[in-house]
Amino acid sequence: MAPGAARRPRRKAGRRVRSSPLAGARDRSAEDWWWDRLAPSGSEYHLLQADSMLLVLPGLGPSRARSRARKRASRSAQRRQSGSVPAAKSRPRPRPRPQPEPAPVPKQGPDVGWGDRIPLEVLVQIFRLLVAADGPMPFLGRAACVCRRWNEAASQPALWHTVTLSPPLAGRAVKGRVKAEKKLLASLEWLMPNRFSQLQSLTLIHWKSQVHAVLKLVSESCPRLAFLKLLDCHGITADILIMLAKTCGQLHSLNLQHSMVESTAVVSFLEEAGSRMRKLWLTYSSQTTAILGALLSSCCPQLQVLEVSTGINHNSTPLQLPVEALQKGCPQLQVLRLLNLMWLPKPSGQGVALGPGFPSLEELCLASSACNLVSNEVLGRLLHGSPNLRLLDLRGCTRITPAGLCDLPCQELEQLHLGLYGVSDRLTLVKEGSSLLTQKWYHTLRELDLSGQGFSEKDLEQALAAFSGIPGGSHPALCSLNLRATRVTPNTVSSVISSCPGLLYLNLESCRCLPRGLKRAYRGMEEVQWCLEQLLTSHASPKLGGS
Image 1: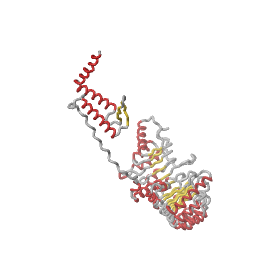
Image 2: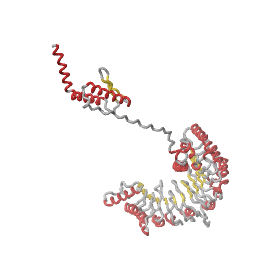
Image 3: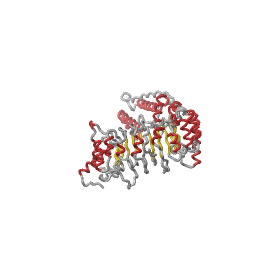
Image 4: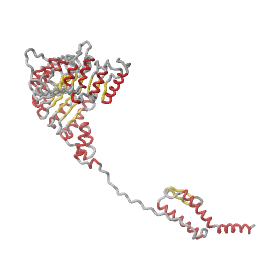
């Protein structure tokens, strides 16, 4: 047994020697296959051989990869020397080429940003567009904190031409409002001399306690101020208004609507700066009579815009304003608005000559929601010398008739508003004469408002037919038509839409003669054309009657 047992290993060894080339290749191939399987080339793992185990470890670096390649090459060399694999037929695996390390990227400093690279003139122009849309505050104050270049651009006085100042917390408790006004006043003490040197338009809204201090800063730092609006402000005295009139030599527009100010303060201001005044806005009260008296005495001969309106609390006291005296005191008037007032013009009397009129008047608004006492005779006294009138707003004036309007000297009227809103049904309205208006101004009218008028169906058809017979083949300029609560018919509406391709607004609310579902306001060309299609469809379907 012992010799036999000793011979068996020799025979196996001999076989192994004879078949050593193939067996060695198989062993090497299997070993390499498992080697590459467990730690493939290019991965971040490597193999570590121990006494009785094989470890797969992560974090393979370039140096470890080279050491692994050397170990594998040394094992192959040992096998060749031992004779298990013939050296001639062995195929050494190519050594991996070391990959060049990437070149170091040069460190760059922080990007200065486009705000520093853009020219200052271009940046100022960009700021100018933003200020024109949203105002300088708070945008310019925030932009000045971005960088030095933006601070320099935001500091240009040319960007601070128009400013609106309204303290926060307006309408809340008195203590909070006073605190907010003082905080904003502290900022204005620096802004006024450093930013407002070229200020031209200033609006103060809801200032109750610090308006005197703000106007004092304005008089000291804003010599180019031309427009001042004080909306819902309290504590306006005669001293501060006189100071503004003296220090701001270019101030020509003053808006005091809804502000608490004594009539003596306004009269003193007009006496000081009346020769250069161009625009004046007032809220009607018991003290307005004294201010209008100053205007009638030729205190403001260059006045172009005069607006008197009622406040939140409607004043039922009639306003007595002599027409001829106003024409003599303000001969350059271009815009006259007496809004929502109960105006009681003084009668001219028999044998009294007409006044000089308003030769430059372009806009007259006498709209009112209450009873208006303006008649054809008063309207003729106002407009007998106004050939350049473009806008005439007589909403609520129930005593005005188409015959009276037809006698006016203006030939190129563009906007005519005759709507009646909230008028009692007991009033007797004119049923004929609308065609006189359209035949006179069909070639220039852009906006026409006949809402609530009592014109008959036939009269409205004749009136609106004037827009379809324009000579020369040109289209009418009409773009807005309000026929609310009138007796207009579907055929008339279809005709006027087809004749006016530029019509952008059409109000057909509460029109009794129209089909149900079409009595609404149409805005835009697409909606107006849709209304036309529906009207044409309703003609083909007689079942769709009016409601």
